[in-house]
Image 1 (cartoon, rainbow, N blue to C red):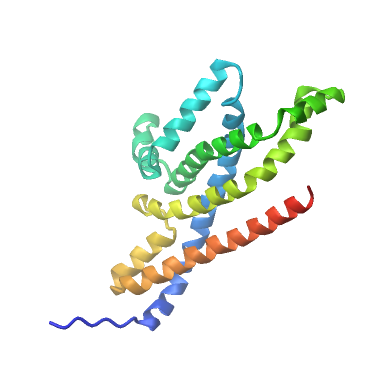
Image 2 (image 1 turned 60 degrees about the vertical axis):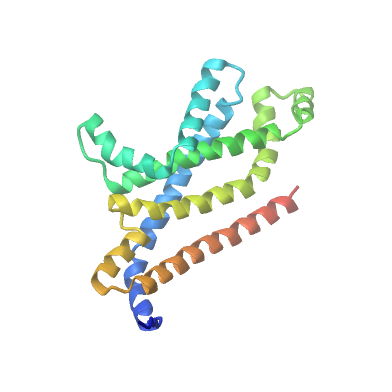
Amino acid sequence: MEFQFEFDWQAAIDSIPFLIKGIPYTLLISFGGLLIGFLLGILFGLLSINKRWFLRWPATAYIEIFRGTPILVQVLFIFYGLPDLIGGPIDPLVAGIAAIALNSGAYISEVVRGGVQSIAKGQTEAGLSLGLSRSQTFWSIVWPQALRRMIPPLGNQAIVSIKDTSLFSVIGVGELVRQGQIYIANTFTAFEVYFVVAIMYLGITLSLSLILRLIERRGLASV
């Protein structure tokens, strides 16, 4: 029995207009979730290094829970589990954004913690010696330096979150993978369609990597 396979370029090309419809959902979920996650990361990252235990422990618990469980389980819990608690359904798009926000926020918290703690204590002492308050010293001296150091790991987290959106097809979000599944069900061209889906994800992540490198270079040039 001889096996033959020939890549159908026409099928791949024909799938592009349909697959493109999923890109806005992929970008909305990933960047909407990352924006909220960045704010959560700043909050819980700073709380995790707070000297007050009643602020530090809840932040640490949040970080460990969402870093220690798969994002697929998290989005399934949000979409299927929370409606039993709140007594109403949750929109798949909202569930996806919430999952990215909570998951990325936990990882970004560790990035923030590491970035802040990497700044020498002498920077804080210098600010205080100039008559600045601790708050002014942190936001004017420590935070700008820490933020520059956070850019590479924040970029990595953004790329990971974009790829994580591919899991949300299980709750019916119309992102790239879901669009591919729908198209394949009608055309039976799985290899070609998933090949195009992979190329689209690669294009998004490479574009983001390029933008982040430019931002990083400009940040280093300003130091």
